[in-house]
Image (cartoon, rainbow, N blue to C red; front, side, top):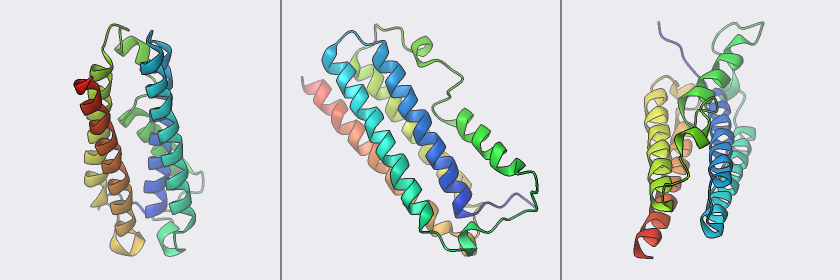
Length: 165
């Protein structure tokens, strides 16, 4: 028997991943010498902040069944595990973005990295979706996936703008 998640746990991971994304963009902005690029990265961080709020709002609207615990967990170990999982899966906060970015990357290269990370998050949610039974809110995971897909669309648009400049 595999681990089953409810929609509440998925939204908890989504919120953490958005916090991690915002931290990534802010740290990348610190390494930028271009004022315009720095502002773009700070705008992306603000976008991640807004997406975290979106997921938190969606989470508040879950039904009791969609937030029901799927396993007995008196010490709240599952929540701690989920946070650790989200922390290390996408936008790894243990890896310093400044170490990943030399400061010599173009804005185009930074956006390509960000698009790759967003695609990884979509793949993660598509994979975990099978672990959320219908009765526990599988359809809510689709909403998270759609939101993440909008991130890729936005970043791709910014990448096209950078290439045209």
